[in-house]
Length: 343
Image 1 (cartoon, helix red, strand yellow):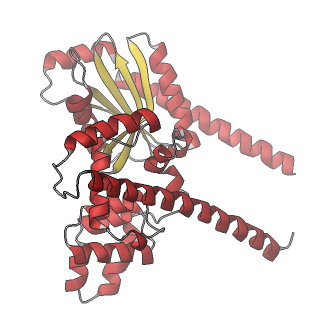
Image 2 (tube, rainbow, N blue to C red; image 1 turned 30 degrees about the horizontal axis):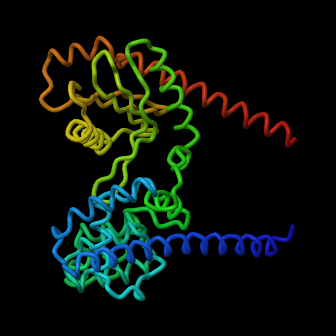
């Protein structure tokens, strides 16, 4: 097949997909801008954030009932603020997502906000790139730097670039469209197989584990995190949070699990629940590691009790390594069969 011919067909499809992503994204941004406008008008044009909180609660309850997630009081406040900060709806850019705008809303300096918006469009920043630039005071650093090109280019090595399909994977977009996120978006084949095995192993262990969620999403200031597995242990009366890392374990991974544990401890415990426990698993060819994260102010009594009903580090390591090795062998066998078929 002619290479140029295939590239022409490929570019047609890529262009069409990009158009679909942009259309869905712009429709969502425009809808939220109009919702913000309607809220302000209903509140009589009062710009104070605390004004009309009762209206937002009532609106949130009804919209959640009719349209599902995505319409919390917090999100409605963002829509309201979105309209106030970008009163000219015609100036909205289809290159920027709702998550981009949520980040821009937090920039208090008007000049800096306009700069970040224009630069995000021109340089095609992902939301993570924009967030890092804002948090690292890119605008101020650029103004004071003599080597402006180097400062501007550093973000490309620090954060992944934006892909058009990221728009469809964005939980805010999925909520807007009334779709349920597909867990496969967030797991590689290897991760999916290991997580499935761990889920089955813990449920078959017979120590009080009950499955709660897979790829459980929690959101902080517009940034989304996903916990690979969440269980509830009805003997210990606590949540057990598990994160799997394929590759080296870092301090950031452990810190992230601490954040999950603290979040559950403060926001999601029911009456009578004990503090949650976090487990970080690292699956790697060279070395596998298991780290437990106990809640704040845990006592030795709690720690001893946990050890009776949670799998030991040795048990988890054994299961993880056996499944990892089995998957690697299976992968090699498939590749060998494929090579034989080609021959």
